[in-house]
Image (cartoon, rainbow, N blue to C red; front, side, top):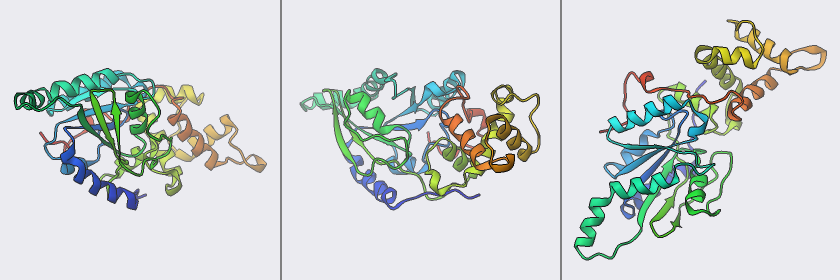
Length: 291
């Protein structure tokens, strides 16, 4: 299965981000902490070039904490500040502002030395769809300003939002890229909800999820579906899950669509517990992060 999704408003967003870059001091690059590598748009490096940035690993509450710590070190080793946050609960918000002030201290000191009146830090938030940008903005601003939704593609236009006296944010629509060179990246994005379900073969996504759980979290899988052993045959695994959860059609046949929907829904609703879908050591060749 080949997964692609590049609506017209995303191409427009890329142009607008490029145009507005000169107006901001720093970039807040929001990624999904469950897939910090796969949720980084490789076009972002190309677009923002050497503009200072902070990597915000959102939904960190849904991850294996030790793995998230490894990712923070990984980004720091690549000379980028990284912070684990949970925009839904408001965790890590103060750290974001403090980190931006620290990174931009020399720039603002030079401005003051030239007699420029102090102003708020201007930051641009970029990231893929459904990474939680609007929720983060609302948390920082402490009010519902940005439109939120649990499906990708909610934010379609850019808007400036004031966060107290210290920060001004430029929200941007989520931007995916035209082609996933590694189809596993597409599968991870699809599983975590970054791509609209309506354009996907969801059964392929469920199969990918089950194979990942079997390889990385086998005991959780057996406990979740009350399995004595995990069948090697994926159809047999679907059958066992379907019987256990009552995903049946007339005549007692397994409803594979219901099993598919169940597996994906349970992952997204955290029924599996905290899970990290990728680790820094999984990256054999790093082509997306520039020093």
